Length: 236
Image 1 (cartoon, one colour):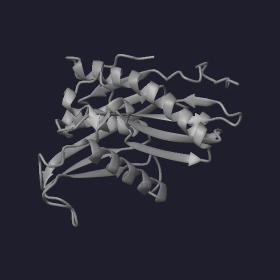
Image 2: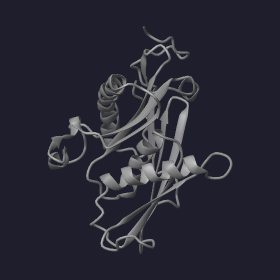
Image 3: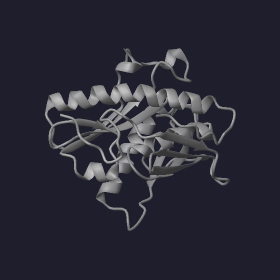
Image 4: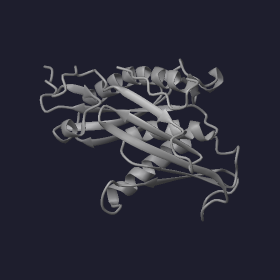
């Protein structure tokens, strides 16, 4: 049984995508990522000399600073910082600029990961590969929907944020297209679930999310290959 969505999309349809880079003069790299009405601005500062306390000076350090729209940072925001930091560390070459710290300032999951990747590229930070993130939700009647809006998300039985390595049709070298021996199209970097869902429902979300990630990877490839830094071409 399918869900009637307020914006008229099908369960498997993404919102329009747009990405602009090199927006902030004082940041070393920046990007604005939007999916429909959801917009995230990411700023990258660094690499700066030195790492924080308890960090390995033989590697580069990634610092994520979460900026909520209103109020103070709470437990949820601290968790988002940890998720983002671990995700971004996994795709950055940490041995190229040892004993440095790169700071990334942003808000909102999962769009924050997409925006952060674009901003890291804009800043020239060495990456092993790119990553794309998508949210997949389970409605009360058991239907799976992709890329829910904030209103839809509040009415879901459960949802999961999924981060995939960029597909083989990407802008990274082919030798980087494997994750621990597996082809990149079979890999997953991060999974964060809210609410309860069965294993079968989760695997269904995983399949839907992986299929959508290939479309997002193609959008990123076109955007990064554009000669105009602030390209905002759309993808359905």
